[in-house]
Length: 116
Image 1: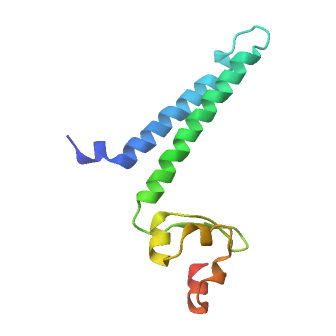
Image 2 (image 1 turned 90 degrees about the vertical axis):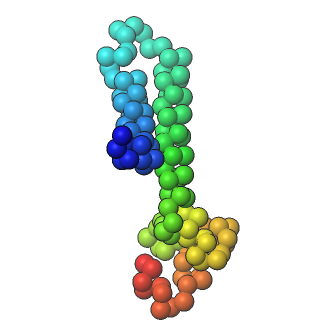
Image 3 (image 1 turned 180 degrees about the vertical axis):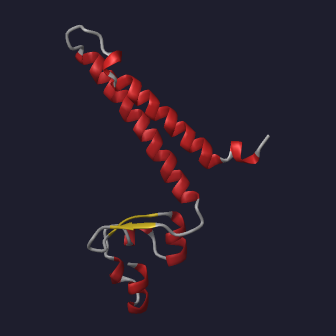
C-alpha cells in the first residue's frame, strides 16, 4: 500500500470533503420536501452542520499544533489572534501573554520588520 494513502493530512482533508458533501446534501433543495416548513427539521440540520464544522475546526487546529514550524495569525494592526504550540515554544512566552497583544510589545526592533 502506498504510504501517501494513509497520511494523516490526507485523511483529514478527505474527512472534511466528506463533511462538506454531507452539509451540501442537508442544505440542498432536493432534500427538502414540498411541505410547510418543519422548524424542528431545520433546527436539527443546523445543529448537524454546526457539529460537522466544529469537527473540522478541531482537526485543523490539531494539524496546526502538530506542525513543528511556528505559525501565527495577526490582524491588520499586528495583534496576535492565533499561534500554534511551536510558536510559543520558540518564543518562550506563554499563550496568555501573546494572544490579544501586539507582537511589537515583545519583539525586538530588528525582528519586527521580519515578522510582519
